[in-house]
Length: 208
Image (cartoon, rainbow, N blue to C red; front, top):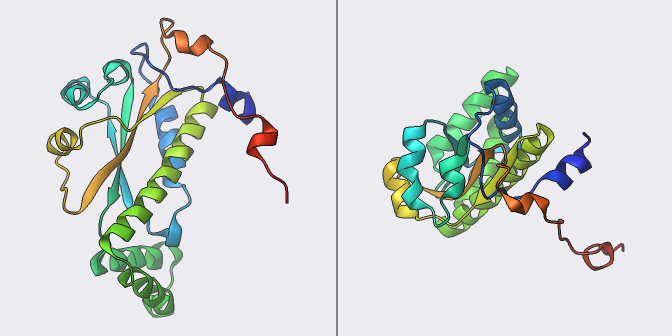
């Protein structure tokens, strides 16, 4: 199956069949999120992978449409940072230095440039920027899942306060941006038989 076939087959599943995704396949999908493009390389987010049935059951009350949570194999929770402090940037450059075997002195101009960029932004601007990066991750995960023949459903309809409490998320420094249910579509989900509706090319694309 090529990528266009995979994306054409993809739809937002309303009910999964409880089948568990093989671990290797799941890790391939997660790796696509890890490899996602990220502004300045800072990856201002983290990804929680909910796989235990007990935890999924706890999270059901947080969702306005809980059928996906109660039937999916895994629930991905993407959390965006609200703040980027000096220690976070320092840790990032320590990691670059280790991975690329480059001295911190050589990285100092790049580090100073990032620091200058970040300090000019308000907390709201930083969070808005972080959320945009999180949605790039979401797109990568959905695309990889489609290629792996795994179904998905991105979801924003949830209660922040309930998820924060259950997953021990600090609302002062981070926020749940979006969630993604992964699994295999149920035969009972009639949405899979509907034709995909998208704008025609002439209304969507404009060549300049």
